[in-house]
Image (tube, rainbow, N blue to C red; front, side, top):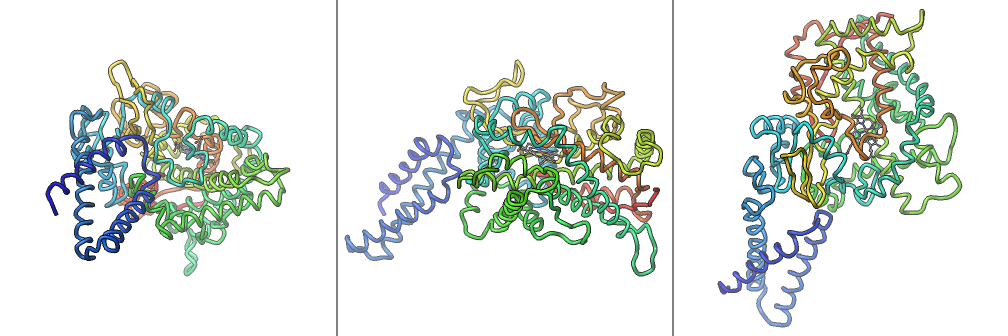
Length: 550
Ligand code: HEM
């Protein structure tokens, strides 16, 4: 093939990048581009063979050469631009390969699904603002959290389960505000009072399950180590099923995982690879590849539909979200919205609460003096003879709130990936730090929580930081495990109520410790060493002994 034709194809590729792919968002169209490309090639081959009389091998060879030259033109121009001084992020430090492609984070995360640790290392090496993708910055500037999350909109990453959009994946601000209203109504003081007995019911299941697993069925010996990570995770899902739809997953009672939760876990496991959104959308377009996720969504939507048809008992979260549809059927597009909300109800509240509870227990067994202080404070807040913890008993206990905050600081349940898009005019973080417009930014909370610029003794677990020793916090606005701004966690009141009640109930009911045969180092390796960042933090194995006190 003539050199000039190859050059023309490559130049056309460069032209396509400069005039088209360089502008706007393309992540939703990967599959369309791919199929269009195949169609164009097939049409060209058919035309050249049938109408022009060329032989098939000859035409295949030419088409391959033209296509390769075309892509060479696109990608060479793209890479040259990304590493050149013309790129708006050129002045920001970071690994060279991250400048070329967002796949950098994918390669960092893939071996162990520990993007939180990869980013910690990267910030230690490159500083507060690091270029971690061609158009992506990871920022741990102490002022960044408030500024970014109050100003920026959600990044393309949130299109991952389009067209099912939950409130969390709604990128349009006006639409998000509109959808946020019913959600807010589901977490008022009155509603929380409705949910409290439901949580207490699951507490009974939790204690019964711990007692059962602590017994060795063969020789009747008690105080056997139990798999705390698993039990707490099942607890968190049972609570969410109960509070969201009025029917729990029955995992604590049966000691068995629920099929819907298995499907969710499998899907969330894929998030740990930190794939760029265009790759996720390509995967979504391949039939069957993301089947488990859609089956999980179907299951949750089924629960939502059941709530609509069988209104009974005290309100659950779904009843508030379904109020507009009491007298009429939702339209097809409203049904899509409800599908998104139904899956989010389970996803948002379960793994997050489970991670926080497991990590809090882990820190308590590593710091027995804090555990003792907590138990004394709980005992002082209970009426004589009271053993069942209520929300009002434990609402204002400084040491309890401090333990929860310290846990969320060191082990934020959403550790890394709150991707946002800077406004077109860019953003000033402080008087000296400017972030250009249309850039994807993230404030990784795991790294922020361990920053010397934000906390004194950042690696120590000190609950008093949040009450009697505020001097240990240098920048309080950088602490935002529930995020801040218009897209922050709407379920925070429920999460805090559940965390307080459950931690208090466990510490009051049991003496909790590591198994006698396990050293602190072994516990650390099993738990922190195997912690995964699957969008939500997945704690590693935590084996604990629960000795009954009351
Ligand atoms: C310790 C527990 C929890 C933590 C740390 C947490 C954290 C977060 C964070 C960081 C976000 C922002 C996510 C993003 O921008 O992509 C979020 C959003 C959200 N959370 Fe939570 N969450 C927790 C528990 C809950 C619970 C119990 C619920 C109840 C269903 C809930 C419901 C939601 C919802 C609906 C959103 C989306 C809000 C919006 O986009 O306006 N969360 N959460």
